[in-house]
Amino acid sequence: MQKKLILKILVIAALILLLLVPLGMINGVIFERSGYRYQVEQDIANTWTGNQQIIGPVLSIPYEIRYEEKLWDKEREKYEIKEKTRWQTTHFIPQDLAIAADVATEKRSRGIYSVPVYTGHFTIDGEFSSQSLEKFRKEVRGFIKWGKPRFSLAIQDVRGIGANPKLLWDGESVSFDPGSSFPNLAEGIHATLPAPQADGQLRFALELELRGSRSLQIAPTSKDAATVLSSSWPHPKFNGRFLPVEREVTPEGFEARWQTSSFSTSVEQHLKACLAGDCSSLRVTSFGVQFIETVDIYQKITRATKYGILFILLTFVAFFLTETLITTPLHPVQYVLVGFVLCIFYLLLLSLSEHVGFAVAYGIATASCALLIGIYLTGVLGKATQGFGYAAGITLLYAMLFAILRSEDFALLMGTLLLFTMLAAVMLMTRRVNWYEIGEKIETRLPGQGMRERTETS
Image 1 (tube, rainbow, N blue to C red):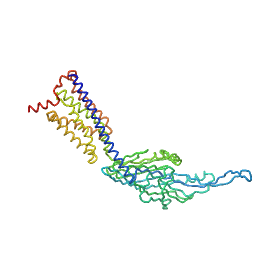
Image 2: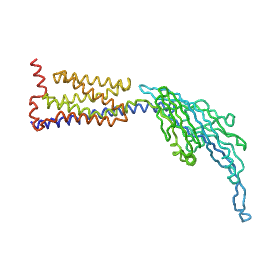
Image 3: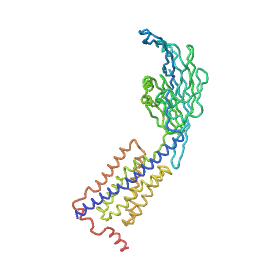
Image 4: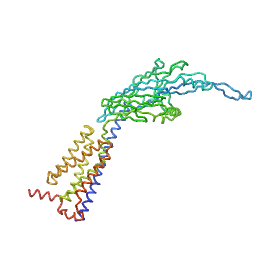
C-alpha cells in the first residue's frame, strides 16, 4: 500500500508537469495578441504620426572673417602673404525660453484595438542674448560681418506638423521652410532671418501645431526654460530625464510644469556634440509624457498566468488530501479535466478582456470556471457540499489573485502571504497524519467504484 501512495504522488506530479504545456500555449496566445496590438499601433503611427520629440530652438548665424594665408610665388620664388575671406557658422541658444502646450487627445481604432493620439498646440517664447553675439564678434579675429541667421527647431516626425508654423521675430512675421540646422537631426523646420543689427532685439514667439501618438518629448536648448503641458488625458506617465516640479492629475486631465537650466541639462556641451555629429546625448536630455491606457490587459493576464501552476498545485493537493483523509478515490483523468478548466480560465480571461474590459472579464471567467468545477465535482464526489466547497475555494483563490493583480506595489508581499497561508493550512490539516501508514487507508477498489456503489444503493 505504501508503494501505491508513492505511485499516486508521482502520477499527480506528472500531471502537474503535463499541464504546463497548455499553460505555455496560452502564454503564446497572449504574446501573439499583444504583438497584434503593437502592429496596429505601428500601422496607426505610420498613417497618423508616431512619437514626437521637439529639440531646440537654435540660432545658427553665418559670419565672414578676414585671414592671411602664406602662398608660394613661383615667378618671384618667395612666399607672399595674401589676405582672404571665408564664411563660417556659429550657433547660439536662447537666454530664456517659455514653452506652453495644450494637447488635445483622441483614440484611433482598428478592429478591437485602439491607440491614443494627440494634437498639440504649442507656443514657444524666448530671447537670444545680444550681448553673447557682441562678445563673439569682438573675440573672433578678423570678423567682417554677420550673414542671415537660421532659426531652427528639430522635430522627430515632420508629418505631424499641422497648420503652417508662425514665427514673430523682433515683431515681424517670418515664414518657415523644411529642415533644421542639426547635422544628424535633419527633420524639422527653419526660418531665415535678417542679419542681426547692433541695436536689434532678439526676441521671438513661435506658434506650432503638432500631431503625434502615445509619447511627447521636449528637449529645450536654453539656459533657462519653463515648460507647461496640459491635456484632457486622465492617465499621463511623466518620463524622461526630468520629472515635473509641479503637476496636477484629475479625471478631467492633467497639467504639469518643468523648470530646467543649463546647469542641470549641460545643454551647451550636448549641443556642441550634436553639431559635431553625435546627437544621442542631446536626445536623452528630453522630458515629457506618455499617454497610456490605465489597464494593459496583456500585461495583467501575463502576470496572472504566472500563478497558474500554483493554482493547479493547490487544487491537486486538495484532491489528494480528499483521497487521503476522506478516502474518496479520484482518477487521474478527473485530475486532468479539472486542471484543464483551470487553464481555460486564462484563455477565457484573455478573449473576454479584449471586448468587455479586464475586471468584468475576470468576474465572468471566475464564475464560469468555478460553476463548472462545482457541478463536475458534485457528480464525482456524490455530494453537492463537497463539489461546491471546492468551487468556493477556487473562487476565493481567484479573488485573492485579482487583489494581487490590482496592487502592483504589494503584489510580491500578497503573493508570498498567500503561499504561506496555503502551506500553513496543509501542514495544520496533516499534522497528525502518519504518512507511513496512510497507504493502508487508501481503498483498493477501482477509481469511480464508490460512485457506482452509491448509484446502485440509491
